[in-house]
Length: 158
Image 1 (cartoon, rainbow, N blue to C red):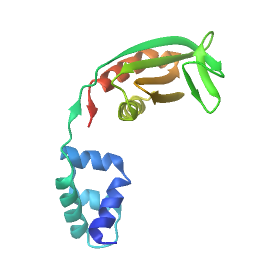
Image 2: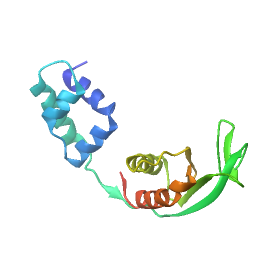
Image 3: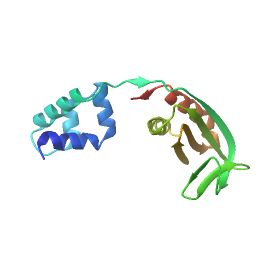
């Protein structure tokens, strides 16, 4: 594999770096050191710069949709969200679900999860299917998570 191909593969293995390249906010020499691709640092930095120039510009797109919150979720075999037999349904539980409907997909989910982690909200479960998204969090995190998911829906990078 060529140095350029190896560098591109290393960037693609680090999605945050790929997004930063698209946004034009990368110090190429620092990125070359981070990637630890064998070879001359300047050559790797040049390969990073060239790859960044080929990527589409970073753009945020507003998605149409609504976000609601449902508290009191507990464990269930079915319900609002089920993953491999572990479900969450309304009842007497201690969890809250953020439910988004509309123009939502896995990109919205990934962006929302990244933003939730950035504000120290650890989702219990999450999923997306056919224009619906669900993120389950601890009840105490519900209001913060609602704001994050609403904001994520309005500014998803494309």
